[in-house]
Length: 599
Ligand code: ADP
Ligand code: ZN
Image 1: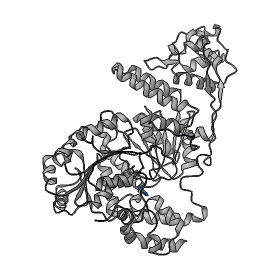
Image 2: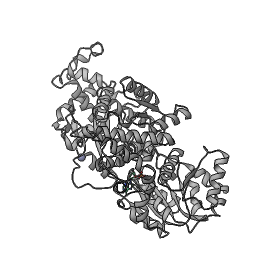
Image 3: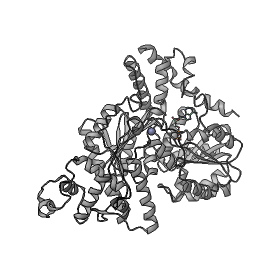
Image 4: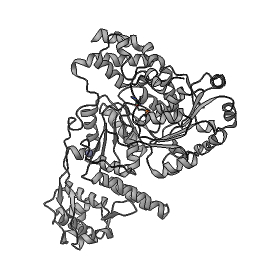
């Protein structure tokens, strides 16, 4: 039996374990259960892949998505591991072949979907072979609290009953304590050792800005900071996904749509292209993302507000899994606030559920409006403390000034009241700025005392005042969703002069790439460009020949290591991160000759 460290170095090509990996691996190697909470990109896979190889027998890994299984298996096979998956995409013969490998004990790892695992046919087969461990990936799927509940996961409780002596490990990137408790109970892991990592993602730069002309802002962001990079753009509706993808393509940025309105085949095709080609922007609803294992997604952009901080964190977490610099970028405007708030109010749900949902909306709004460090706020939300501001988010790098807005806020609130709580923000701004528009005049609102009282404040600043009043809950949108505003009881102390109010002053932020953390994620010096492109093109060619995504051959970080080290022979190459023995044997010469030719 090989030691975990040997396996880490020789099979996977990594020098040392990261964070709690070693302790988790040891727990399983010793035959005990583990429950692992680790953020996306934290390195969950090795936590079960290494004990899978260290223990005798076949490890069975339960995973909810075919794409994810295929990807993992492809990567393992590249590293010389005997891995396979069973899914509905295989024909009868392929299935037979894999099953007989299993029965002959010729597999190190077998990936299976939960619905297949719990069939009596599969359980019967498993009872006849030696099993190294069971790993339950994306374990939050067992909980109703999470957003990815799958009833098939409930059946996994059978594993403890039928295989009481096989160690089990459940893994998730969902931090929510309720979900965690649910996982332990439903999977029978009450006795398991629990490993909770920090949920900080230090390589992600967080930025939230005011929505002006969203498409122009998005285009500028991509061009300036992510030309040629892969990224994900999230939108709320299918329609907006289609429009945004089209607009990006028209502007010369390669983009594909993904949402539940496309046929399964279109979705599959777009997803595969996103994984296999380089530099594609996926424009998607929340239907896209879980199990997308692509390590080099360089940015995640939001054109609409997500429904909760959990959702925001989950979605932005898909950027930079490889640990290299990545961006989380969002623009939001007053329309988003109104939409989210009235969606909750207008829903048919019960009172308790509504209160929950409202709390979530309030939390994401306060994240957006805050002048505090974004990372501190995010981590606090997940029960972690960050002692110092992070220095790696927009609020740290370019703090927003605040201003004494008590008077302006009172004026805004009384304008809502005096006009009968029947109009939206644009109308309020007209009245405040003293514009004699047709509708203002015909309503006689030019005769109000508040008319023109706010002419010294610019339109966009008024909009920002209203947005912040909405975010703070001083104003509420009507539930019909037409954007009319009414006062909330929460504004009374302010109107009565009992409190004052500071608001964030909106600036047109000019965050340069330099400020966001230095550089484009992959900062290749100009003299290295030729070699870099040659290495990438070699990788692309090898990937295409085998029909696998390029990152399955080598990650960007490994190519970067080759670029920096310029190895002259296999011995020098084998020390680079991500090059295990099998990959060295398979690809070492090919990449060495590229280095020789271009360096
Ligand atoms: P998760 O499943 O938690 O999102 P992965 O298992 O995909 O994360 O790992 C994220 C990245 O970190 C991968 O590129 C992986 O190869 C790399 N990685 C994991 N563990 C180590 C380690 N000990 N040393 C170096 N790189 C690692
Ligand atoms: Zn910060």
